[in-house]
Length: 218
Ligand code: AP5
Image (cartoon, rainbow, N blue to C red; front, side, top):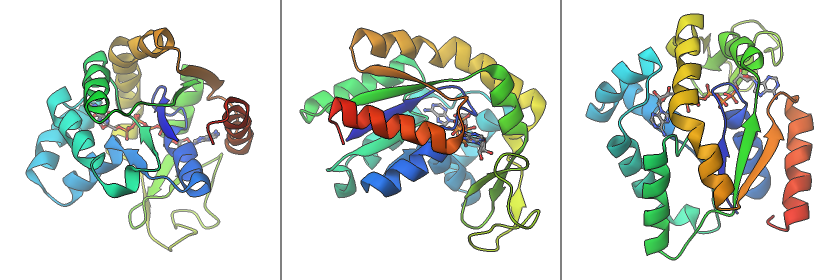
């Protein structure tokens, strides 16, 4: 099962990816997570990426395309994978198509999480992330049992620097200008399915499982 999750920031792509990855035992490949990890460990890649990420701008295509091309060479991707947050520009999608063609592979389904700006802003400004294990919470929708502490590992929760309202608004603008054109790119290739990102976590997960069953891709 080779999936791309497409949608604006805050659509719930990361949250669904975690559940799908567990259910279908395929890796969750998030370019945002990989970039944040490089920032945390002080790698040269992270230093370059940080200035773009903090402003809510996209990291240059050649950087992220290289990251994903390397990651897809890992053996754990043989059964399938979930691409979360990649591709994000038409150039990235074209590079992915080229790379997959050379290994006679292709994407099975692109899930477009159609989401209102109101939902995205409310979710992102309320998001809290565990410093230790990376699990995502939301102060109202998915609160931890104890404020500021991760239920799973007891780690401290923090707000991502790009989740402030001003940066979220810029991320949504960047999404409309540079990523939304991928909706028609994948619709033309006949592999796009639209779902509502405004649904609750469990409701949306059920919609996805039903879709996989109907399309016989699970
Ligand atoms: P990235 O980490 O990919 O951020 P994003 O796409 O902006 O995605 P988010 O994680 O903000 O949203 P999401 O849809 O995953 O929502 P989530 O499930 O977390 O990218 C960050 C930056 O890295 C970019 O700005 C860019 O600089 C760079 N970058 C990354 N990839 C790149 C690329 N390919 N090219 C260039 N640059 C790149 O949920 C959000 C919140 O809502 C959480 O609090 C969650 O608990 C809650 N929530 C989730 N689902 C629901 C639901 N159904 N109901 C209620 N609450 C929910």
